[in-house]
Image 1: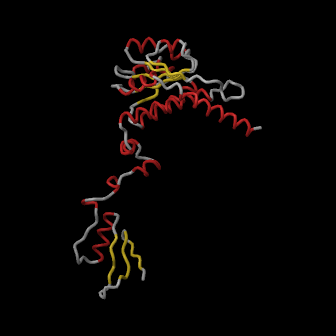
Image 2 (image 1 turned 45 degrees about the vertical axis):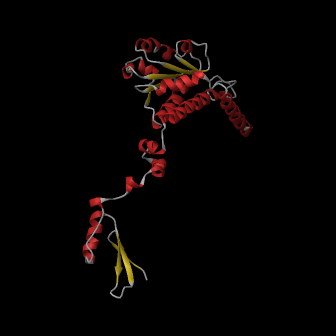
Image 3 (image 1 turned 180 degrees about the vertical axis):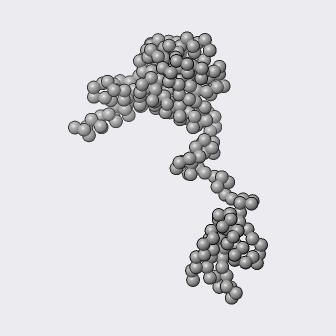
Amino acid sequence: MSLETARKVLEIEAATIRDLVGRLDARFARAVELVYGCQGRVVVTGMGKSGIIGQKISATLSSTGTPSFFLHPAEAIHGDLGRLVAGDVVVALSYSGETEELLRLLDSLKRMAIPLITLTGNPASVLAQTSDVVIDVSIREEACPLGLAPTASTTAMLAMGDALAMALLEKRGFKEEDYAALHPGGGLGVKLRRVENVMHAGDQMPSVAPGAIIPDVIYEMSKKGLGVAAVVETDGRLAGFISDGDLRRFF
């Protein structure tokens, strides 16, 4: 029974994403242009599960060349509206389009002339009707067997957010080196690291004059923390090598 339920969940969510493909139209293109022309930051907002999806979308935008942050709508109406400045663009996520905390932001956004892009499952909602661009992320059904927990609806929002971020990445000509500059840590950071970022040069390189005695060689390598020196006998036979101050012999 559990496997059947899991399969049905995945099938519903996969079908949900496929349904979105046919909705990519002039409205989506307009959203891309609005964000691309943003002179400030892309401020993503949403309540509950939509807010959690919004945080991920904001993070993806930020790491792919579009400065962004997440604004919690409940905190916004208690002073965090001060984070918004002229030139920003707001992306709001609300499946119902009637989320009270988001509706309370509308007057402030209008007063500040901040464009509003809304991802919603209800294009006839109050939020949608007051938005500059509406992207339809409506679904046939939730994947939750009870039809209650946001599942397919949040998947639709997440997928559409990814589509927006990747369209912007391409439009900006964002390259691997740009991504590496914004993501120096973790496995991805190591994978994208350039030789010039890790190589040693100049005074960092251990070096001694030809004919230097072994103690001086060891001292120089120990001082700089790297280096390899061969140990050669008078008859030209390689007797071993010194690496980072440790003598290791082999024959």
